Image (cartoon, rainbow, N blue to C red):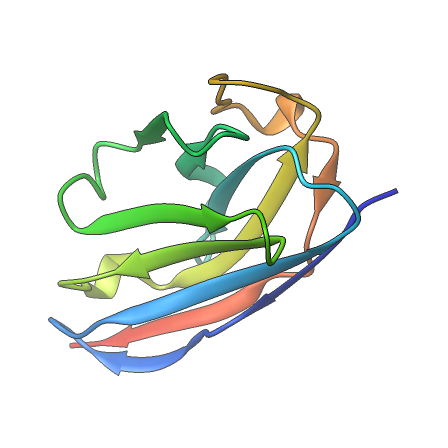
Length: 123
């Protein structure tokens, strides 16, 4: 069993930055960030392989967000720059078994989820 705890959310002005963190208990696997905005379905934001070598991003965040991980600390990060009001959402960390350079972008591919952290971008 893997427990995931997100932190770093908050209120920021448009154009600002935030860094989310996700600390995992136990061994980490391939991981990702998802988000769910008001009245919207949960959607993929970014994914990273266990090795950290390969990453993937949703088109809406490419060039603005960066996913990274520190396996020694069992921690996943999401650096969010140039934030827009449409980035407002609850952000979830997710993990699943996966070795090497594989990453995953679908909700159903993940086995473990955090409780979420709220990010609000004011215009």
